[in-house]
Length: 132
Image (cartoon, rainbow, N blue to C red; front, side, top):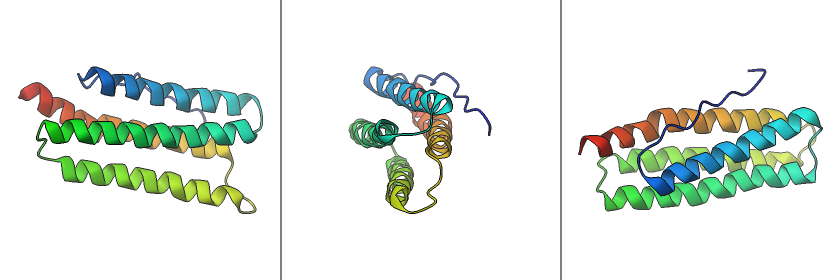
C-alpha cells in the first residue's frame, strides 16, 4: 500500500474506548505523515514506541471493561491483543539490526493491523454491547 488510509474509527459506544481509538488513529497518522516528509530519526522511533505504549494501555482498559460486561468472547479478543503486541515487540527488537525495515513501512503496517483489528474484533464487541 503506497499511502496509508485509515477510515475514521467507528465508535464502539464506550466513551473512553472511543477516545483511545481516536488517539491511536492520531498517533499513527501523525507518525506516517511525518515519515512521508522526512527520513525517520530518533523522535520517530520514539513515536513508534509511543504507539505501542498507548496500545498496551488501551488493550488493558478494553479488556477490563469487557470483563466487567461479561463479554463472552473476551479470551479470543485478548489473544488478538497479545498477537498485535507481539508484532510490535518483534519490530522494535529488529530496529537495531543492520538493514532494518524502514520505519515508514512499519508505521503503515501498524496502522493497517490496528485498523483491521478495530473493524473486526472491536466491531464484534460493539455489536454485542448494542444488542444487549
